[in-house]
Amino acid sequence: MSRNPDRLTLAFLSSQIPMDYLLPAFRAQFPTAELRLGEQLGALDEIDAVVCWYPPEGLLARLPRLQLVQSVGAGIDHISADPALPPVPVCRIVDTDMAHGMTAFVCWAVIHRQRHMDRYLASAAARRWEEQPIQPPTRHRVGIAGLGTLGLACARALLTMGYAVRGWSRSPKASLPEGLQAFHGDAGRADFLAGCDTLICLLPLTEATRGFLDLALMRQLPSGAHLINVGRGSHLVEADLLQALAEGQLGAATLDAFAHEPLPTGHLFWSDSRILVTPHIATRTNPAVIAQQTAHNLACIRAGHAADVAVDLSRGY
Image (cartoon, rainbow, N blue to C red; front, side, top):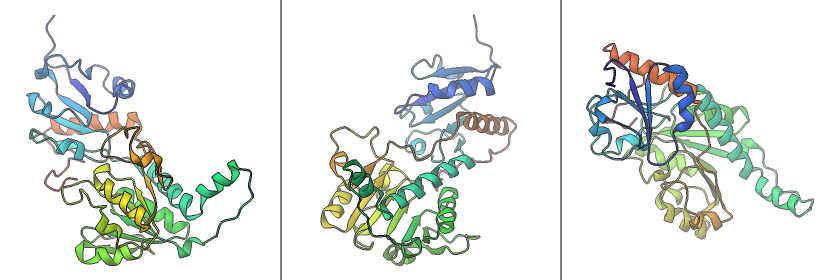
């Protein structure tokens, strides 16, 4: 039986994670479409759009009918890293609930170390009543590198709790929250870092920010600072983090993203009590939102319009 040429075909591609969790939402959003998963792609010249997270390198260029490449997250570095990426629109997800999830995670990570909750957990496990030093939030300086949607949401929440919050971006930002101390560009980075008792990385991953969290940067932080990376694993130079911890330049790190995921069981991060590893769960987008935004983006493209959240690949976001 020949395939209906007018039937929409979507493929779900990832070299890192199972994508079948998306299928129920996409079946509801695209009831007449053909959905293809993983290695069961069939004829490549029948695929109209792909929904992906780290798609296999070179595969997108082999889809001659491709009209849309849809990321399942806010970032697209996992797509743009493909040197054979074809010239079709690449769209990211914009999700208010994602900002809520990230804000909750970041606030927890800041409080967990600033209020010594790691020590309280150890004391509780040993049935010891032990107090730790209490420092008010106003005396703890939190820096956020990356003032996009997620970074600003985190800044607002931390300001509400009374933390002294500062932010850094590559270029100046307008309409910033009241109370946020802003820095930008290479000229403002050293002053920004010098006032970060906790540093949160929420930058997009581009060639300019790859390896951003290196030893030179860590040595510009106050001694004993806490590093939180909820950006991308490739922002961090892993060996430099271990050296900064060994030197005492950093006191702790909370890491939710890694260059290689899942993090190998033999990785040194697992055995260092100063490093808290979480499995890339800081925030997630509801599959229904991904399906809805994919449908909207595809409708725009098929009508001859630019998708609302098409990415500027020259900037990387």
